[in-house]
Length: 182
Image (cartoon, rainbow, N blue to C red; front, side, top):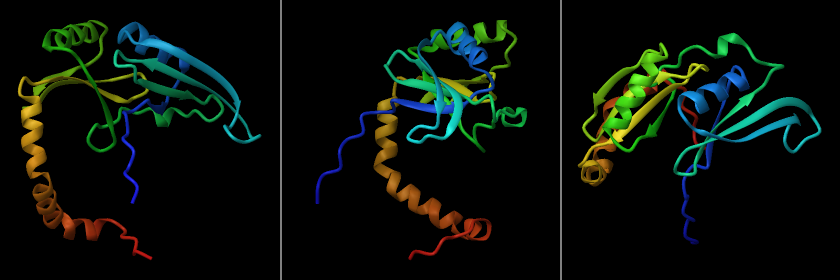
């Protein structure tokens, strides 16, 4: 069997935005990211189907991107409620240290944005807030023992996962539709 190639990282994750300019203002002017691309496209990729959209790319210091789609012909206000980071999803951006995190917390609060935290999770300390599209964002700082904690967790991860699966199997069987293997 051939070895599985290594995944180098996430180039970008892409999400829907309410408005390209509003999203640019937030990610560039508030969060300080660099806008690297604004692609105005009129056809669905790989097809001749008409689809008018803009694809925006904002670069982080590590060279990875967060991207957005502005789809003016299908945009709907009900898509942009504030997402719950546990029940839906959130994005955790890494900062260098707690001073940078506090500077962002102060900056966001001075702009009138609600910020939750800092919360010490043991391996990281985080603050949480929302962008104009309703996406929950997190600024996280690794604890001094981050790598040691992750190594300890990795060593017991198979056992912990097996225990969790056994503990929650009955609940999930009641709540989720199980697809039989073919």
